[in-house]
Image (cartoon, rainbow, N blue to C red; front, side, top):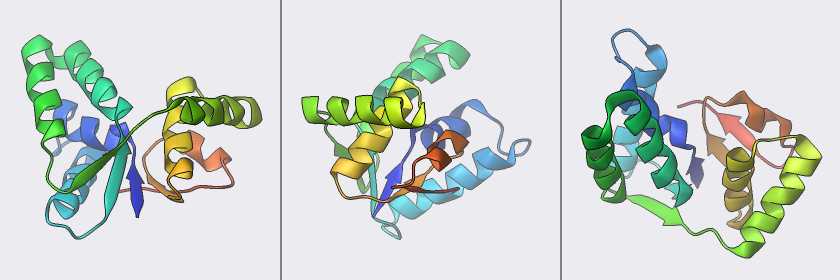
Length: 135
């Protein structure tokens, strides 16, 4: 089971994969999810992060389109955020100094017994309970 951070969905949309290797790697990883080669999960807040990041860079129409695509992404499972998730995120922020959204991602993974997070965000390396891998 892998938890997928929002940057994995954002990079292939806002960066040229010919120029940015991370975008190309993310696209390849997303294909693995689509073809059921990996068991992938993400938080519902990923939808917000993707929609917001794409809107800032490419505008409203692209944002709406990408947000819609994310909701229909094949074989990707969305995990909910509850008050217990936010309480755990608070603990993570205090213990590891993460930003709020990163703490929510970490808490969501941990609440669902997922120990590997796929991300380019090295802030997750601070969390002893998680292992960060790049796509």
